[in-house]
Length: 96
Image 1 (tube, rainbow, N blue to C red):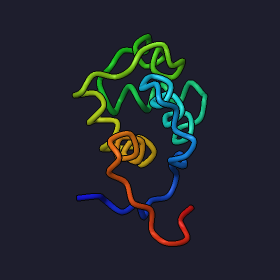
Image 2 (cartoon, one colour; image 1 turned 90 degrees about the horizontal axis):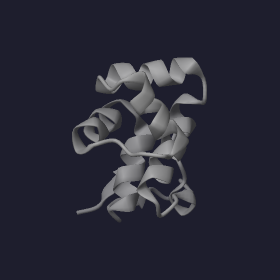
Image 3 (tube, one colour; image 1 turned 120 degrees about the horizontal axis):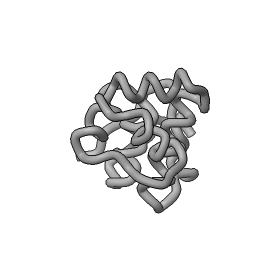
């Protein structure tokens, strides 16, 4: 079963890096930007420390499974990233 995307802000599937850490960083930047407020938002969503979230934004490390689920719960970009990386995303006609 593939899921159809009808969401707002997300990284186009053709632009998703193969590296998990880089892909998560790209999705976080697309959804939240690159400000300190963005880091604080991801911290609230996941309960992760500031240092941990900064590693995610830098693409140096990736979130654990539990943290990834929390990010996908709050971020359309991360959810679409997950679906794209698992080859489970189908774009609606005209979506890209």
